[in-house]
Length: 453
Image (cartoon, rainbow, N blue to C red; front, side, top):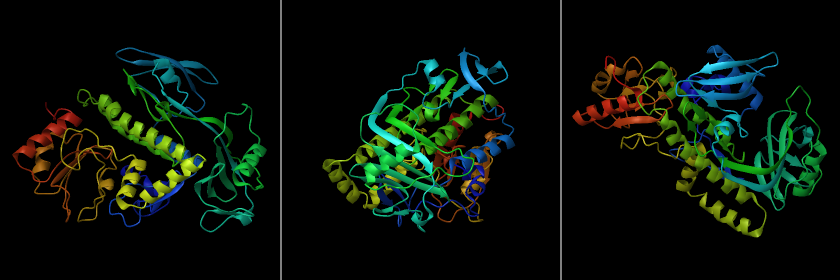
């Protein structure tokens, strides 16, 4: 997604294009993607404060009016607009807009005001998490830690007989360390660092010296009584839409939350832009829920499965042994990678080509242009890989669709129509009379009437 907007290099610090992940974890069990021909899981490890800062800079560069500290206190809506009530340290005021997007987290005021149900379950766990400073001598060259009288604690999640541990370090002197214990809730009160240290001793059986990190922070220090897995029944109510944590909450295991929320935003953003710019076909905004709600449900499923597989006990141990064997089968590993990437659900786009409804594959034209680079303008893209007839047929939509005529030696189709979110809306292996008609149908279905009606 970042690469499709020209942001990957500046965010990652890498000069080249994104590369698929060599491996990942599922419930603290290793997944190896080495040797797979089609790996859809990409990862970019980054401290959240840096990510927020980069996104803020991007938004400001686009002219977005960011108002830190202002709080939504209520809203009302009708068939034409939404009026939001806002409170700031200096004043209270109203904002009138055509749409309101509720991206206000798991305790979403927007969702509650609309009365949208948030069904799910709360797992009987207590999680503790903090940024800490560990002794320098614990650190290893491969981003793990070597703990005296215990041994190696790798990057990511680990399961033990008495619970789970998460360790991650993105910068020296500031590690993320946490525990998961499958016990009833404890008293709600501010968590001291000593509480995490005691929990680590119960889970690992050794005492680990912990200090608060130096520097301005913010530094996490929190307890989570019970892990919620909940999914909004609806993502849309008239002119109000939900995305991110307002629509779904789940375990952070495996890191699916940010990816899921960004995919929601990528899906919704271009459709809202189409509405605001006046070329959206009827029902386009409705496809946000029909496409993204099933993907959210998939994340709820595998998040709960991972929580279950982290629990103590010999029965779970046997399940993990079985899962571990299955995860060495290449086809299973490929499917798990797609599941964790959120790319295993095929959108119902109304076209039967094998590419349609899926993320566009990684492709490079013979003159060296990558498809993701061609999408930096955030517009729909028609790439004609044959004789130019598809490009000619789409000229009536050239005011909103980027049309590129190129060649690829081992082309997957003669022409591909790609939505701004990177999903294929239409493709054809040959461009005959039938393909000409289906291309025009797809253009009208997703990008409205042709120029001039």
